[in-house]
Amino acid sequence: MKLPIFDQVVGAKLVNEAQISAVEAIHHYLSHLSQNKKGNQLWTKEAMKTSPIWQRLRLLGKNALLLFEQSD
Image (cartoon, rainbow, N blue to C red; front, side, top):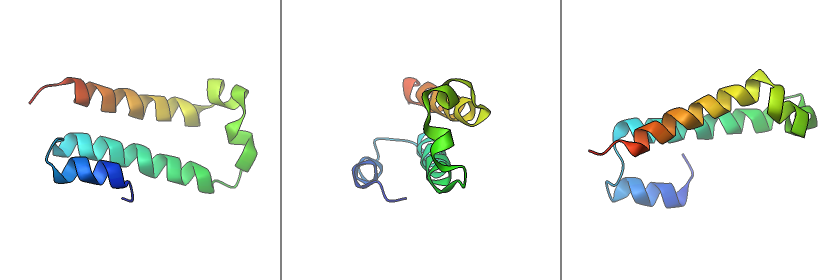
């Protein structure tokens, strides 16, 4: 994954494997969205409110937040 700041956090062992996986899942999902053939249709306010694609991203985000709220 090419997220230099996050790579530094990982290198400093400030996150656990589950947290890393959650952030990577979001990163990969957003990368996939950026390459989607529907293009601009995905990036409208209405699509962001109602599309299952964005609902999935919100779920990934909620899962990641839960992992970061847990203390090791």
